Length: 493
Image (cartoon, helix red, strand yellow):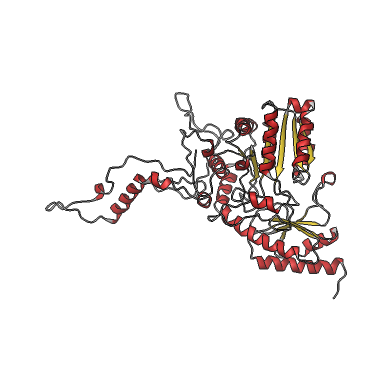
């Protein structure tokens, strides 16, 4: 597996520099090193000191900047600084009939480029922000292990595959404010296959506990599985679920049943990628991402990620089952999609920091604007869940001094017509669905959601903040609000 992990010590001479030095035939005194010999000698010495260097570890920013590359060097070959795209679907079988244990067979089961992405994602979900921990096979400390990552052809495929990994019937408790595609998938595709769902206020632990206990009391609950599905921040109202509190509460319920009931705590952390939040370290059994969004980051990838926890018994149990679903059903991304996502990861930390900073400034602007009824952003002190967001959206900056609240916000206007008018008037911001790209996007969510499963207020606009200059975006919104007022409110002053 590929990890940016402690360097492995190689066999080097006790004095690695000495072998590169020549001596005078007459006096036997050392002569100066040639430049090439000096470089080789320095490399040999750095290998000797590798254990000392590895004990310091590296930050998540460095892990991301090198995504897909081995941290160590062999010192002999010209290594590519971009991982190759392995397009082969099948691999030749050795003449003795036995595939190598670490070899490749068929790309539905495994692919070198996909494996690079899966390993990096597993590392990012559990790594310590300022130190890379021991990942050697001899380590018995669960806290030193990385998550198991699995890549799928889309975020929705990742969700469906995760649910299929559970014993049926599967009772899924979902937030009242949630991406509309989730209940739509349940209603249109999975309800006939033993997947049931109920909406619950995830920000109210007492209500959630009551819902879990009610499901447990039914035949379906006793004979199947329960999945507590958290989406935080939520889409589109930016509600924040206290992941640790929910997971602790679920653990108490598990213990009360003697571990006989399978309950999974799952977090869709698409809006808060690993550089912002690490749900597995807060106690979740599994984390899901739409890699199409922030991980890819350039509006050109369709991909989903599931990472199972190495810390919880349920996470460990799920790992092999998710793997079995992935390989047997084959809803896997192409090698090119995986490569694009690896490329996107290399700038994830920079993009997330930039869009978080811009989003906070835009949120303050919108919150104080007279035409805006309400602005939803967890970075605002007025947000009802700001304190929870401050605890679990810490950000993996080198100083760990500043929170990162992400690049997603929404704001409400007094009418649907006003909201659509504002979206129609923007010039720099683009009208489009999806999120997490370099360009700022705006969308009227109510009009895109299925009528029977609408969660957005009529006057709400969702904004995915990009990498533009904040003043340009702010001015674009200001002008759009003015134009909308003239059109809708007949303001001709």
